[in-house]
Length: 503
Image (cartoon, rainbow, N blue to C red; front, side, top):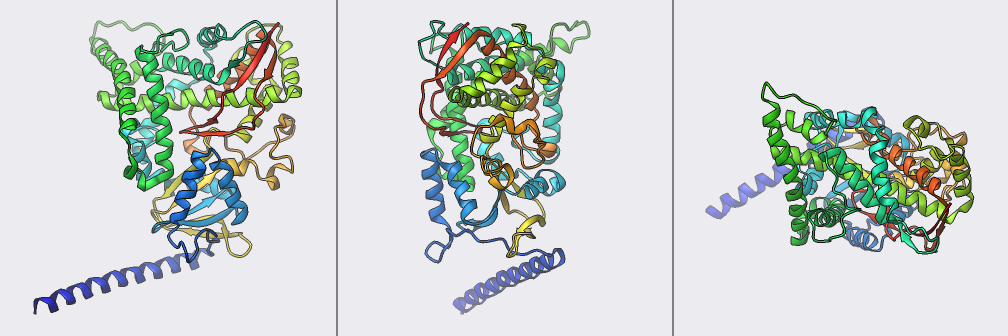
């Protein structure tokens, strides 16, 4: 008798699941009919031999390891369409490189999408809650906290940045013959600058030569943890199945180092709260943050959420720009001629904004090698995207609540139907009459547009101008093609090895 009851209970439960599935199917069908939705093409890699897309995971991992993931994703758009549906295990999701869809995700339907719980879970070991890992009210609070650090007065403080440029300049051989890896120097310079801006004192990685000092250990752990975070992003919900002790150790080293600065700021906070305290000196992000956030862990999270883009955005832009120009001396000569008109005067914030060819060079660099070439959002309600469905790909598509949509700015920035037949080539002159909209997103778009974009453009532009004021020639010693290095930001994987001839 007990077996009969168990069978009956199991049957009832199964019927309940089927009925719920059927009701969901009816609801989805009605939503699609009401909004004119048509299905998007299914990923051609999903076949009867691999209906769950398990093979896709292995392909993604292999291309990530081989530094070819971005081009691989680009070929998938060519094989399927500019918007297509894919699947990994039982998780259906979309990929798109359509400007209209990306505009909807990031701006016109901003409140229908969020970064999702997966991003928080994958970033949590290093970054916790902050501007990159939060949604809704927590994100709005985080953005409000970090915004003062990127106002014009802070961004335009090029005198402070010149100190770090000079430290980098001292590391560049002046004999006109000795090779130098500029990528490594750019990373150190921008980390030194970002740490001074955020912590109130620089890590001075350019001037510290001892690899055992805390700042050097921090820099190494910081790099390692970011690389692993990128892999966790690719694995999504499977990330915790492959979490390494080395990664957790790198996160711990990074956090302990930042905790020391946070402790100092919290002690200063106690003094500042005294009625007789007289505040003076310049703006320091950490000190101001500690005044409004009394949880040391939360302060650390906010710091790390800002430090990563503050360093990576500038250094990756610089490395890619030098890599491209050193291989194309025509572009380098045109930029050098423009810089010569400054007569050796250090450029101001306003000067950089009005230096036309410099802006074209940086725009073109960011078009070909966007800092965040792959991104994604999760629908927090049933919603539609404007295009991608139907035989002609021009009908709306239905995105169910909880579904993910990945988008590739890398593929969009290289679409020949948008940018022309020379879309794969480095041609700064294309920006002479180009006024792009949502087809050009080097710093994201909408309410979550990168808050530090002006800082990155200012520091990168200043560095390029100053280098050309100090050196008459920058010659590439690397004959290889650009190879992707995907961490949280995308950088060139190989060293940017050049020979520099001073004036």
